[in-house]
Length: 234
Image 1: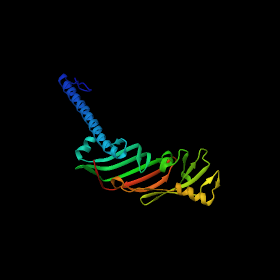
Image 2 (image 1 turned 135 degrees about the vertical axis):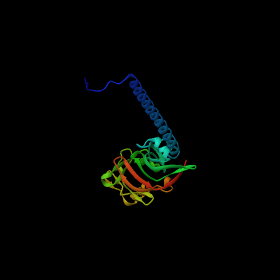
Image 3 (image 1 turned 90 degrees about the vertical axis):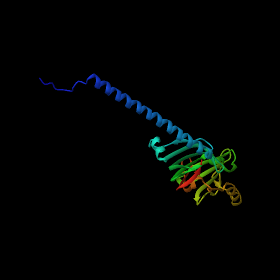
Image 4 (image 1 turned 60 degrees about the vertical axis):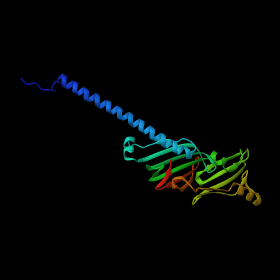
């Protein structure tokens, strides 16, 4: 007589299968733990080095590539750093988002293959730049590519300011000041625009970064920078 259907596993085969499954699960759990530990350790080291330069400890992302594989190859293909409250160039409260590609360790530091960075400068930070008074408010006007500075408790004195990226400088060029909607006389207007005018140098940047674009956003200013192969010290 012939029987159809799945054959019944013998007890010995069942035990062998169970052992194999338990071994696979144990190895998988061990690999997952090792991956988490290595990823955490790498991120901690990167955050410590970057934190010394940013003045605050950033969040670090290592991309989707397994950290164990990155360590084995000796290269981090895509490192993302995000930080708020960064201080630089006499400005505070900056938000930084940086991508570093092909990061390698060498000697007392390392190298990056390329980098791209965006820096967001909020309206509050802009109002506090250059020793502005407590009654100064900056209102972004992205539709016209400018910032409108309001001075005084009622904000009756307004000065339109156009930010321009000129090489490795940010130039803040003021337009005609107004008081309660009326343009000020030439002599007074000239004196006020001289006080509002600013130039921010973007030299000696890390990782040989160079400014590429500056735009007015709903929140303030966004500066985009990028760089090629560069070395850094840990």
